[in-house]
Image (cartoon, rainbow, N blue to C red; front, side, top):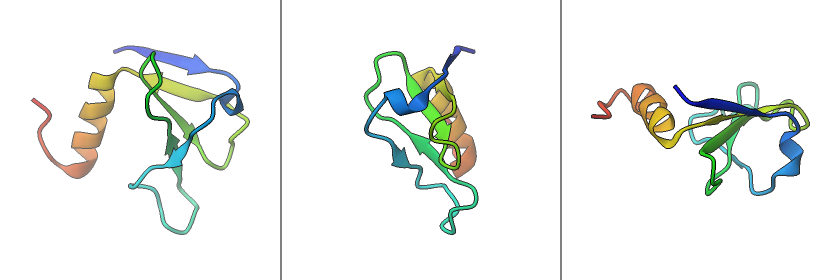
Length: 72
């Protein structure tokens, strides 16, 4: 599995809250579309902290698991 860390996620712009995040703001993931290295993901409660960058295939597998749909 490909995974990389961006130490200061605020260096990137265009973050959006994941549609699977808690609507009360307690459990929010933010994702960044269109990044050349993959899909950066960060905790919205810590926007200055790190972000993990997942490969597109790893992100599709994660989203498929959350949705309960196969990713093959």
